[in-house]
Length: 371
Image 1 (cartoon, rainbow, N blue to C red):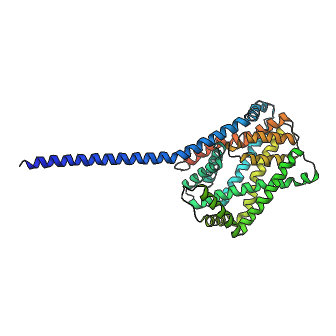
Image 2: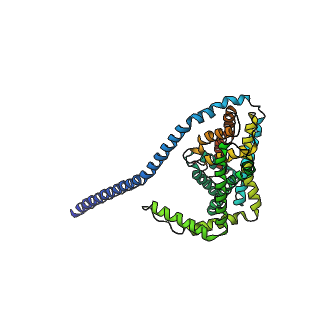
Image 3: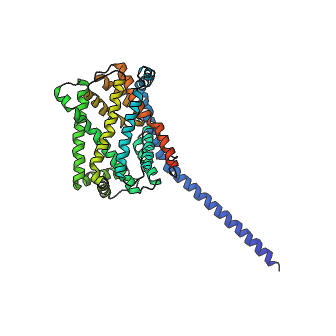
């Protein structure tokens, strides 16, 4: 009769021991997981710290010019108020061109999804170092949340980025007669010729990659080999050439018979942006040769791609001011025109990005407010 309580006590003790072992095992597992996550975060933290350091140093180097440009805001009171709605309309036209192009590459996407995601992605790309990739990722996420198929969203975003960058590289060709006629300041001659050389090389490569599979495969294979050698600790990638070929075919197929509309929309995106710079110069009373302004504009877009500061902040202000001065614009007018141009092409799109996030949530995006 006494065996019953003793057995119960032994069972109870055994249960407690098993629970203690389970708890210890669970704790050890969580500790190991935490250590693994910390080890994985280590390189990412170091990379982030490195790029923050590079960004800080870069901003320090261009700070005098940036402060000079931003400090010219008081000069806006001397500009006729009629110029501001015109500049706003030109900005809207430039954005609308991107929306049309994006809609052509993703035909069944809701217009609201295209507009909301572009505004938010564009704003994030302007405030994050190397933000082009982050902006594209946010735009992709928002499109998928609105029901766009993942592969189609990737193809559409990629097509828009490739087309818009290709057109801005082609713009210096329009100023070729100025180079031949010798009506250009020597300070602009070298960078202008460099832009033309870059355009010719990249345009030829782009055409070759579209029409032929072998060069595309060769470039992709080389990139894959370099990537695998540089990241030996990470799993090696395979089949990059085939994936890129599929994406290229998807981009071409996405445009289909609408290639002419896509071309016009892409040209419109940059033409209206260039018109903003011309209008900013006219607003401050400067009237340099449009061809020279075009060269300054194109080189400023290259500076905007510098990944060490958000949206090329500081580099664009420094470079564009100097280039406009070389184009014959007075120093004070060049600074004020640069500020006015950046006000509408860099600063104003930032609150528009918040508006895009808010509209995304209102239109049914599950995670529209998160970045």
